[in-house]
Image 1 (tube, rainbow, N blue to C red):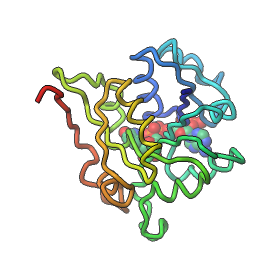
Image 2 (image 1 turned 90 degrees about the horizontal axis):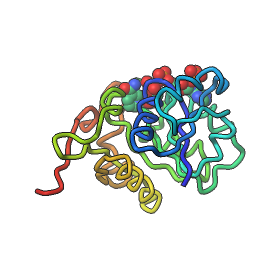
Image 3 (image 1 turned 30 degrees about the vertical axis):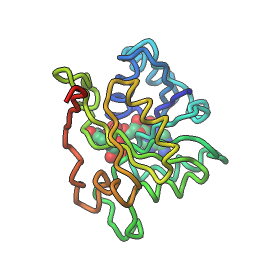
Image 4 (image 1 turned 45 degrees about the vertical axis):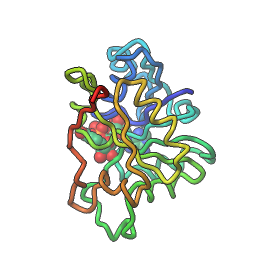
Length: 201
Ligand SMILES: NC(=O)c1ccc[n+]([C@@H]2O[C@H](COP(=O)([O-])OP(=O)(O)OC[C@H]3O[C@@H](n4cnc5c(N)ncnc54)[C@H](OP(=O)(O)O)[C@@H]3O)[C@@H](O)[C@H]2O)c1
């Protein structure tokens, strides 16, 4: 499975740090040409490579770390998204609920990336916390996972495990997943909640 992070801001870099910590290869891309941030990427770790956006979009799994308001523009960057696993790390905080037709923001993102298999994950913690070592006092930091496509969540769970986190399944986007969806100017109840799972209890 190949991985790419789109967006190399606070969250994109935090995600890159997770991959680097485990020596897992990941491509990173944004709007700028790769030369503009190649050294920053390499400074995070030798497995983090800045690539042109078009190349990053070839990855099997794409972690979306761009502002919610940019998702439609990115969706237009490829003609087909069929079968691609899209991990939505965005938060639509401050976006009027009416602009989303009352739906979870991730459902709106899923609609824009027709054919992609959207999974919401890695969005509930601030970037600095995401970047930190997920091994906390012998437990693993929890990452919440939700999707309307149960099967697509499996490789995302596997990635979270590989990165040292404990994935916790919330269910469908509009059901358990609503617990991690910002709505208007309200953060959902699980956003910013830093849980740690201890496997021995
Ligand atoms: N910051 C947090 O603590 C946090 C935590 C969890 C989730 N989130 C969510 O994660 C997302 C990113 O947040 P952030 O704080 O990392 O933002 P940020 O620091 O502003 O970085 C955004 C990145 O997205 C890139 N980008 C913007 N539009 C793009 C497009 N159309 N195509 C490709 N790349 C594009 C930017 O590239 P350029 O530099 O080239 O413009 C930049 O690298 C947001 O949706 C946010 O709500 C943030």
